[in-house]
Length: 202
View 1 (cartoon, rainbow, N blue to C red):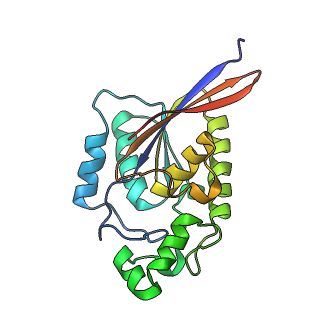
View 2 (cartoon, rainbow, N blue to C red):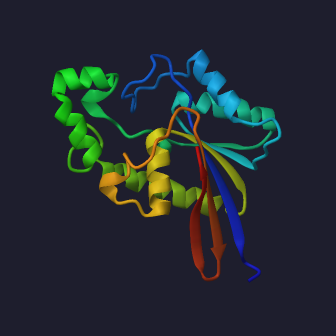
View 3 (cartoon, rainbow, N blue to C red):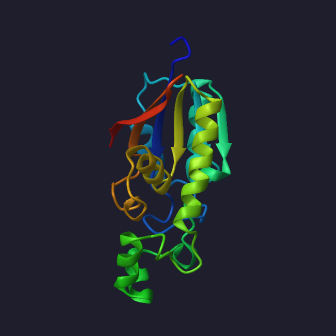
């Protein structure tokens, strides 16, 4: 039993970006002043991590850089942790999508995103695979550490969905992930395998 290792991953979604709520995807907007405030309010003064891991998008990375520097801990970035790409819907609000594509389009997407992706958008299965690859690589590389992962709503949903065994068609609609939402996952690595569980959310 001497090889047992516990890894704690705290996932935090970025705060509100400039431009407010919309289907942003690969649109690389920075945090708004409110978004910076939301992120600062979500991180306690006495919290400690061994490392910060961030999406390469600036709405995540700029805060991650600031926090890692303040805590004097390493920062890693990974392009695979970017948000799912929404194709023609990027930069559009729910209202604009409903007007242009009809309300049924969003209903179909939320019911089964793999079968009904946005026009020109990323397949859910591709998104899930790249998040799974990044998750596996980093949790092996940083095993036994406390990790803060600064990422996106879709990344949190997919990562937690995998831990909880959420069916693919439900993974993007099964949980709410507001701006600066915190989620904790625990991984226990042992000679008998790897166990993962959701500790807290929201």
